[in-house]
Length: 485
Image (cartoon, rainbow, N blue to C red; front, top):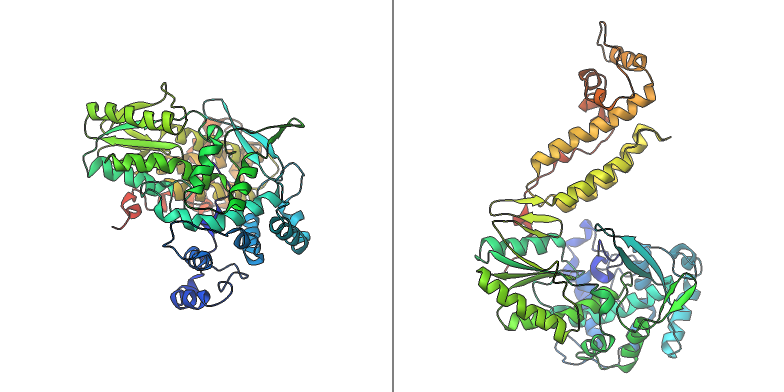
């Protein structure tokens, strides 16, 4: 759920900084209007949208919600749904239509969706099967809906998510508004260090999203929603089928990863597990299907593992991978979402470091037609996203080492451009260095660490070109992701 690309209202455009001071008054005014202020400008916040949605469907204190379908196909809801789909972009479905193509006839397309949903004639298309390689070499299947179907799924999600979200387990973090992987890791760290729950069951589910039981998904939605049109619409999403190699395959089980509404349906499904564990007084942290169960001793951990397995397999009809599910402890290190939590620090998982280095290698080839400025611009985009995720870890030493390695790779690219020692010597003289310099090969990786290269291409040179310096970021900031009680 690097997983799902579309995250529904999780990333609804928030107020700009200039408008935040007046957010409360704007929210009050918004509820008095037909639609929330800022909808068409793209500035409506999650909180405003939820308040407006709940005001339209009967408030937040209802046990059951009826007659929601007209809120789904309301034109303003469809417009906002398209804004979110457009923001997430994404690949085309089986019809080959891109988001840009859909936008060229936006009003006609949204009117068609409105009429089809209103007259109950809407039928989703099969999703396009795409497989991405996992770290262990296996394939993870994704299902890419058409842009039209993504808009409809987003429209449904915008209406029903505010109904379910407030009652989800507090330690569930996957694909939820204003929640993140870092918060999940911070919660796990608190359970381990502050609460003395130093033994952990790391649960592994086999093909979780591909094996979700359709009837249990519908039952989960039906606990709060009694609109039969909504339930049938969700069933149509689930049973739309998958197109692979030109043939349509039926989907009798599972919710395809890649669908806009799939994360919400998975959370509704797995919330039964969360709530049963909570009722038993068992602490957990869950991010989608990544589950940690916390215990104070190895014996208690084994007991909790049996309980969790029973709920997941017997009640939810899922499969626990017994080969990968294991018990570990804080002293050994608890791996979670790319981090490893130890008694006194949090490190980056070695597999993630390898993945980082592989990505940098791909972005810094020695032979290509791009100049240094273009290469650094592309590299910066990756580095910025990477450090924003991993700055929670205590990784200052690694970042210093990584920056030295990155600069060395960029120096190697420049060496290949110079082709011979003459280019290096010219660069040294331009920087005011004189004398007889050693004639070194421009094709040897070992020479990229030569002091001559550091003189010709010093760190300040990369800084002037705009290379992002990872060592300037504050790291080890897990406390910033603690939740206020």
